[in-house]
Length: 452
Image (cartoon, rainbow, N blue to C red; front, side):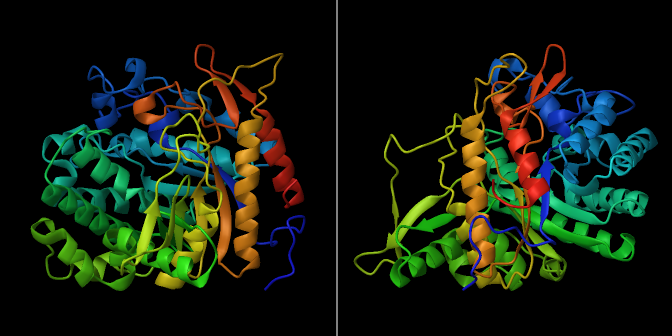
């Protein structure tokens, strides 16, 4: 056991950063040849997005990125996780290349470098070209081939400027929530069999992105997946409850992390899926299970579990109505999640490098008062989570970095502009940026490399 205390510095190699995504901040939804995305279409369907908000302008980052990077640099931010908009590169998903889209990302990354900021580039963060969705989307295997071509194009073009790559963001959200529950674009409600097939195709796309980085990324390029794994916390840190948490985590993540890292779907998962199990072709898992350099985890919330009764491996406990939560109704505030998720991933999958690629909280009412935003609730949320990251490192869990979500208030998917996750306030009417109290606090954490 390490002798680190919470006032001890983070390791010298530990990466602090912030994150955002193309669809949520760029705006310019139909500028310079960009094609329609599934979120451009979904947002225009009545009742799908709060207040009918669209992505058309968002934070206007497309035109303001140089000022935004200057603001990042002034806060001491040296690492930024961003994403590429697939419809900017291939407006129809396949077909003709839009060179203006590639040119934009070259200008954007050049600006980052001028401001001393290292890019961590996510290839897919939910904004599929609508044309591909019209032909079946992730339910269709041909979409994987289109994504492979897109990944090859982007990695080959940006290889000299980007070293760190992330394949996909949160497979659950753009498959199960999008094709099963229907709460996210494209808003379909398909059978379990179709949903499981979308997940399998997403796993294949992940493998194609890994291959693209290995073939075109150049010397020193690194690549990994970002997953929003289902997370649990043992009620007590006893051997019995920890074993229960391990069993719960294994079962709930078998179809994504388990499949990738164990070279196939487990017998237990296939038995649970039954007739809805995905159709697998020869050679699929040779691609899906290509080795990666790290695993990204997006950690926001979790469930409590304890040792099961009557022969059950675990028992998941219901949360009381007054359990602390953010304004995002799904976001129960459980800092221990950011300790247990990487620990269990390291134990179960042999992960040797893990990055927290997102962690943050969404609130609705954060006014600017005399030029300041007093988001003490966010400061405390991040501080308590960083304490658990620090604890994980002290216990030997290989957590190598932390990216706070998000740099700036932005388009929060079906919640529109109502819900704010940023450490920088954005006035959408004027596009005026105001760093919040949490931004100044996080700047001090990054500067001193310790929890302040």
